[in-house]
Length: 190
Image (cartoon, rainbow, N blue to C red):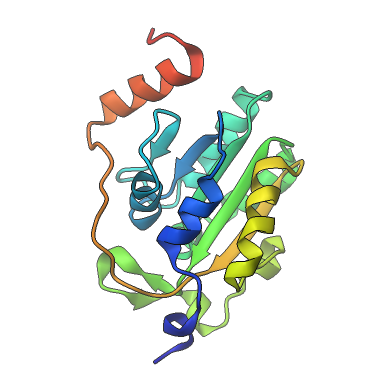
């Protein structure tokens, strides 16, 4: 068994804990498991799951944070998805939006394509790139508080167990998701 299977934190429980008390938090979920995790924690009109845009979650969250400076934006993504758009962290570092929080669930796997190891299984250290790492369940409450409240940009890496879970799929209709998110955010659909 590799290290990823031995991490004590389970991703669904971590997502549920992080989203507790979210109030009007805007949540962007990376492609695949992060989208399913936020849906399993309770579908919400202020959730925007990425469908078919691997590597774009942080960039979308950054744009939303800039466009909505009075709203807290949380990007919840995975290590594989973030590795596809790693350059977005550099743009976040330049823009430094105080309302942006990024949380990465790192199971060292590309879960949606067969659980192949990502670069983090071989030593790529996302936490060193952006600083911060949660490795025990006891640290989740502190991570949740940081993601919800600490002026950003905030980056939180959470090591989670590599496990195949049942899907908790959000709606797949992109137009519906866009309209639902826009209505919940702006109070109108135009």
